[in-house]
Length: 52
Image (cartoon, rainbow, N blue to C red; front, side, top):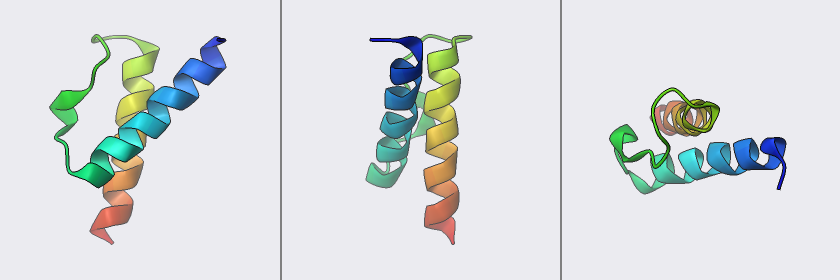
């Protein structure tokens, strides 16, 4: 798979984790990687939507 697909999967996984109520510390990606950034971005988007 390409990097774009990996980033998209990480973003969607972060959204799913937020919807399931998992804490953001559950991110499976190592610190200082683009995959972690994408996962946390997805998490943040889903948690912002849930708060509304």
